Image (tube, rainbow, N blue to C red; front, side):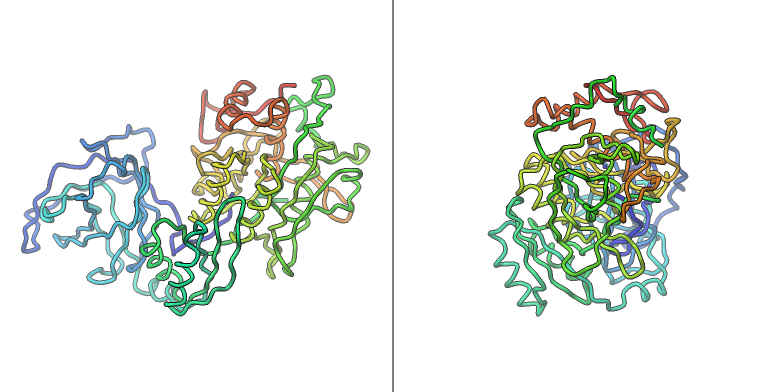
Length: 508
């Protein structure tokens, strides 16, 4: 389940304390004075502490932000938020001064709320409180605190910078969205028909993009609206991988004619490389005249279908048709980036070509609503997505699309079955696969040892492909159960945030 260090709406890191029991009710003097001081809350990490809940079952477990700017969105994490009634309110309390938070939307585990600009002091810590409508003077503590950013941080982060805003809607909503953009004087930069997803992606541009996004989300609550963020390649630059997977010559895994194609959502494959002689690759470019990255996808494709054993390119499933959606570009600074727009176009094309099994070795630390919705729609339509966990290290937040429900997330191990030092960790990890010091093809008919969760992902996907070979129409849930029968547990017994369920092993 992608990873690159990127920021969205000014949120930098996930700052999570343990879930707190909502404290006993605290009375607040209507004149603004508190009749005493509330007990201090120890917010040091304590993952071993059992989770406690408020009588209604609602759990407040963390915030997505190191500090929050007035006039932006505050995201609150927890459980059972969908059980909150319409009369429930959230607010910030400091010295008896209560500021109501506008709830923009909520689901079971997350609430997005708007922090008003008025009456909010800079660089101040507020207690997050929970109360009933009409009882603003009686509230319960959530155990979480919210810190507003310093004034100078507010200034530096709210300069007028023109940014692309993208809107993913059902086809019936296209004209209302166009009309609203026209009413606001916002240009329609482009419109993409994502027929396989039965959706339309509308791209506009604004100097106050954050405000535009917040306002449009209110006008179109059923649409997904966000910035056109970039994803980056989940990779950093021995032939042990086959043995680690159990993919040996005497295992019977060499006959790999699958009968169905594999999708690669990545950069372009250097099809002139000797590793791809006599291999079938169908490619489509979604980058226009931007500089295409050739390194990343060439290496990943060689792990899947490389067919030049003399030079060490021993693909797991040679002879399989690869559909290559080219979305990864090289920026002027040399970074490997894939825009949300390009990724969704590529994903839609793969689905339109009846490609079900898709490798996504791209990731972002930014939770982009439009990106996430695109992948959710693809999974609902039967796509099986294997995604890299990301390479931002064990302390980094979860990455996307890897962290989405329904995506198989893969981390990387080395020849000693030790975790890759830069791999992301968390409860969203599903499986481990070889991804350190993997010999792979590189452009200009060369090869190199590559490391990263990017290169573990195709190994895991190949294991799954042999299960699908027997019945390509089985559901994701059935595939998941089948994969669970061929695992080697690593690390602490059972599922863990480092290795997930363990090392995937092939059964032929």
